Amino acid sequence: APGTGPAASGGGGTAYDDTLREMQPGRYGRIQIHRSGKAYMIVGSGEDEVRMEVTEGIRCSFFQQAVVIDMDKSSYLPLGEIQKHVVVTPDIDAVFS
Image 1: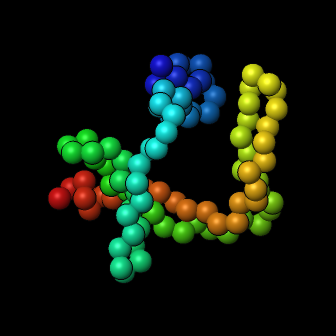
Image 2: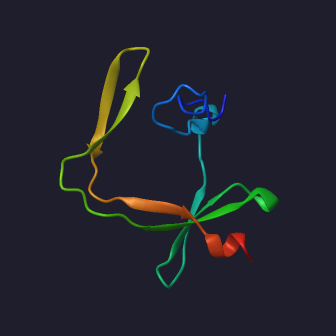
């Protein structure tokens, strides 16, 4: 069920949101890049559309790698080194307009 982390169930611990577990495989949203360089991630459509601002994240000082984990086979597949980060935040101006 959505939001069933340890804190959500009253068990203490670190709160986390695991609602993406219920998502169907496939595309999650689209990226919209303006001439000015501003970027937005658009999720949903119509009245349910959510617009989020995409900005560059802080450089990390340690090695990070993206992997795909196959729990059934107890294995993982490295996808490569993470060189840049992005921060995606709700577009507050769009929410209140």
